[in-house]
Length: 169
Image 1 (spheres, one colour):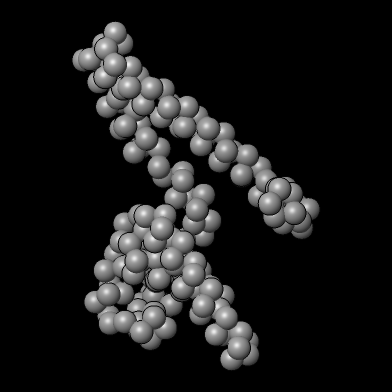
Image 2: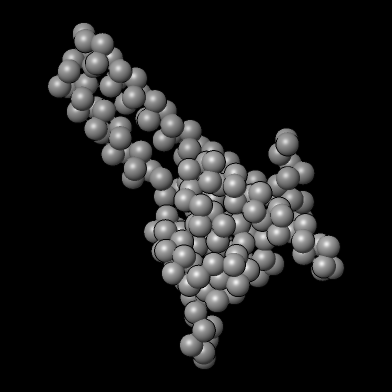
């Protein structure tokens, strides 16, 4: 990669991090995640992340802790060394979405309890019912979408065609 390319990648990395911030991810976690995404290996040490982002080790540590908790990245260690690294989960977004079901179930169950308590004859009960029905719908759609995604990935592997050429942009 040329120096100009590295500069363009750094600008893109920060722009992508900002997209993640605007989507609700904490700023430093967004910057760490974007740095890992644009690295060919998908993994960097804490020292490499700190250097790349121009921040201290404590900022990296907090960001990595958050990213591990939400299962977007994992910590690892190079075999035979004491060098730890942070790496993007394989299939990170499909994994992330697949793991959302327990949260959706809790909201759906909570709304169901609200419907039972408030009754469908009240405006509050009707709002809770809409919430319950929406989360039930969302769970089913996610389940179907994940199955479709797995089928697309399998078709991609079998045909040497990328999903981006199969799906509309």
